[in-house]
Length: 141
Image 1 (cartoon, rainbow, N blue to C red):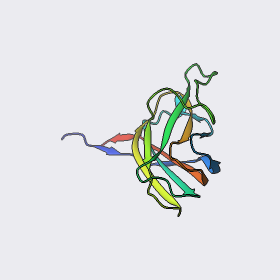
Image 2 (image 1 turned 90 degrees about the horizontal axis):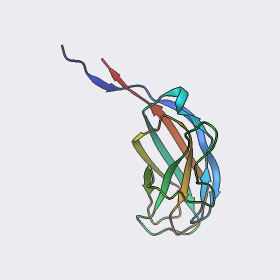
Image 3 (image 1 turned 60 degrees about the vertical axis):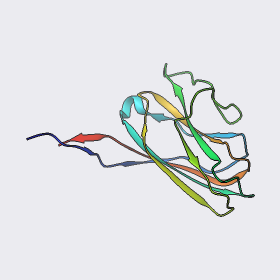
Image 4 (image 1 turned 45 degrees about the horizontal axis):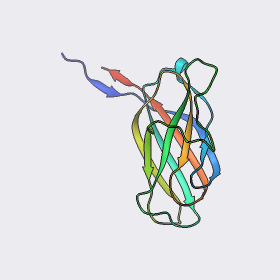
């Protein structure tokens, strides 16, 4: 009988970013997640944000992982420094001022400690910004 590969049960991680106000062209650096110890392969992320003025439809929030590959020093990236590498994923928004929730799943996680950096690449400031994270692996059955 062949083995089946299925999704494992997701585990909620305390929101790395909660209730932040983030200006356009700025970011919020979340709490560190120790994936060197936890060894999860995937995560789903959900951004909740309210824009004071409607952004242009299709603009996005960008998610970066700021790595501490040597377990001590974080690579470049922070509230005022956008990393000069591709984003791990993005969350496109609608042109509305009401609260928006956008989810991405199957985001591959690095095997290091990292901090999620949520970068506001929309044209508008936002309040009540939260980044939720759930981690999971595959299971062979």
